[in-house]
Image (tube, rainbow, N blue to C red; front, side):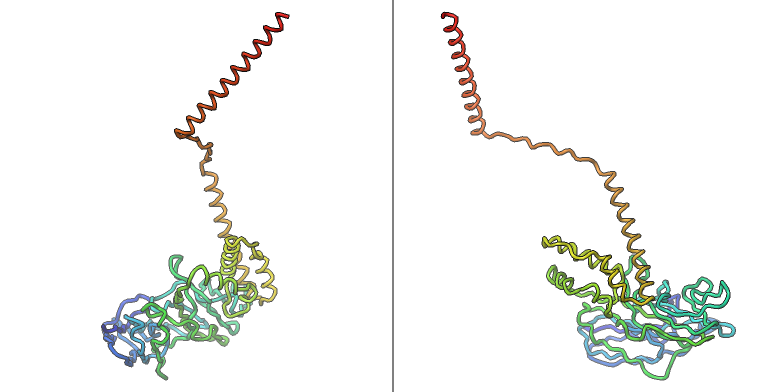
Length: 374
C-alpha cells in the first residue's frame, strides 16, 4: 500500500486554495525525494498575493524551495504540506513588528504568541506611548522609541478544547518569499507517532531582536506534543520520584506553576495510597524555588499562580454548593433474621427462663406460708 503526499497553495488567513498553484498529489511507495518551489506571487482577482511561508507538514519556513526526503514509509500514511500567500501592506513602512501564530499541520492561531514579561520594549514619553501592546493590539510592538527583543511563548492553545502546543520556530517573513537556499524536510523520528506526521518542537531560537524604527512581520510556529505511552503505575511513580521541585525549575523543562501544582498533587495522592507521610507542601516548595528566579520568571510565575488559585477557589465553591444540596442520609441498624435452628434455640432459651421464673415464684410462696404458720 502506497503512502500519500500532497501540497497546496492557500490564502492566509482565509484558508481557501489557489487553483493555479501547481499542487502535487503523489503516491509514495518507495524511499524517495520530492522537491517543490512555490511561486513568489499568485494572481488573486485584480491583485496578487505574495508567498509568506511553507507548512512542510512538520515545520514552517520562509524559504520557497522545499525538499522532502522520505526514508521511513512505515511510520506515516498521509503527508500534507501547504504554501501560504498573503496580501502586502499599503503605504509607507511603519515602526511596527507584528506577530502571528500558526499550528503546524492545522492552521492559524488567534492568541498572541508574544511573551510580554519575557520580552523587552521601549515605551515613549507620553502616557499613551506604550510599545506593547500597541494601541491595545497584543500582536503588535512599536519600535519608534527604541529597540525591542521579542520572545515567543513556550506554549499556546487555540481554545480550551484544544491541546496545549509547544513552541517550534520563530521567523521573519519576507513578502514573496526567500529563494536563497533549500529547506530540507524529512520523515525521521516518526516511529513513536502512531502513523501520524508530527511537528518538531524548538527548531529555532525563541527570541528575535529589532532595531529602533524597524518594522517586520513575524510568524511563530507551534506543534502538538507527541503523546508517549507509559506503564502505570510504576512508570508514573518512578517519574514523580525523580522530579524534584527545585530541579525542575532550573532545567530546560521550565514548568509553569500549574504544572508544579499538578505534579505535587499527584505526589501527595501516591503518598496517601502508599500509606506514607504526605511530602512537602507545593506552595512552600514553589516559594523556595522562586528565590533563584529572574524578575521575568517571577512575573510569569506570579501570574500563573494567581490563575491556579482562582481556579482552585472556583472549584472549592462548587464543592461547597454540591455539599449544601446533598441529602442527609439516615443510617439504620441492620435487622437480623434468625434461621430455623436459631429460632428453635431462642424458643428453648425463652422457655427455660419462664420455667426458672415460675420455680422462683413457687419457692417464695412456700416460704411466706411457712412463716404464717409459725
